[in-house]
Length: 234
Length: 234
Image 1 (cartoon, rainbow over the protein chains, first blue to last red):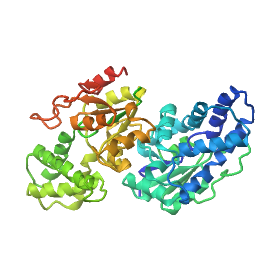
Image 2 (tube, helix red, strand yellow):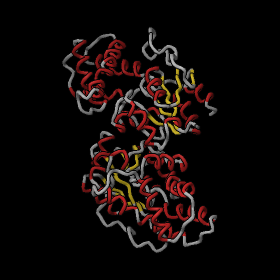
Image 3 (tube, rainbow over the protein chains, first blue to last red):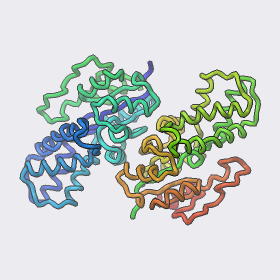
Image 4 (cartoon, chains in turn red, purple):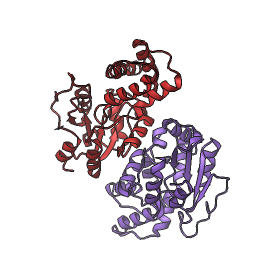
């Protein structure tokens, strides 16, 4: 069955959240006299991402969009780092740094090539406004912004993948999940999605220890989006 | 409050459904030996659009996406015109003609100008795959495909407008509804959307009798999307 749509993981696969968040945190908080290891700050903020979504996935709390989870997690990280006396307006602005993440250098050029032959959609846990603002700023040429908030489920819940395909009128077999994360590809593959692993060896910085290699039998393994475009004949 | 996003009605406002449907129906059905007034056929098919959605809006039936309503309505129109012996594969293809509607001549150029300064989203009763396929074929540069299927409500239900704004993280006052239909603009305006009437004097053919003039006190009245771009300073 022919691939019709590419469903992209976004954080880490399309955009470099760690450098972007470290840069924005440094800019805002150093202007308030705060000093710390900004990459450690970014890592600490990101480390609260999965546990926060797990509260929703488990049903222990009702639906909450990622912007709201990020904002709660920011408060917790500030406590953890002993940072106080930053006003809410500044923190709301810092929280929106997730809407201003920079793409990996190959991402836009690769996506523009892939877009010629395929439908490109988000299959991210980020909410719609986050994805729209990010795309607008970075020039990401999505055909549609789908994902968690639209489908009402956080990856890796099966509904997230199944509903994303269904909204496009496609069978999972007609969809290619593109991600830098084995777990995401494994969840999609189990549901009959085709799979493409993309190397992002510095998503977690120079000492990254996870997702350095594909661990599953994926349909495609690509160095970056340009290589993926080559492999898909775009 | 500054306008941040333009929410577009699509059928009639962005695309010329009548000519496109008449052309596709003529092509498919004349090859089967059927002859009829193809514009009348298109009008008859479209005339069943609002009653079908009203079944959903009223709660008399559960959610059904527009593709499915179109398919049921096609069967009814074929009966009405006494057309039989067309097989399901051909009818499914004809039903997908709604995914292949042509834009008005100014639409793509106007939207590309508007996209520089604003977020452009669909606020259509068409389902996601219909909007994505149409955009891909016609080159409509949406920032996001939202609307009925994503928000779970058919216009003019208030939830359709309110949820579309909310998904973008915007207040209705930051949203401009763009439509060629007074009823759509009135429903949006009541909910604090800003409003732009665009003339589409031949949506219903040369003898159109509705929506020939704006009947409300709208924020903008534009000849077409290029004129709207002028008026919005794009």
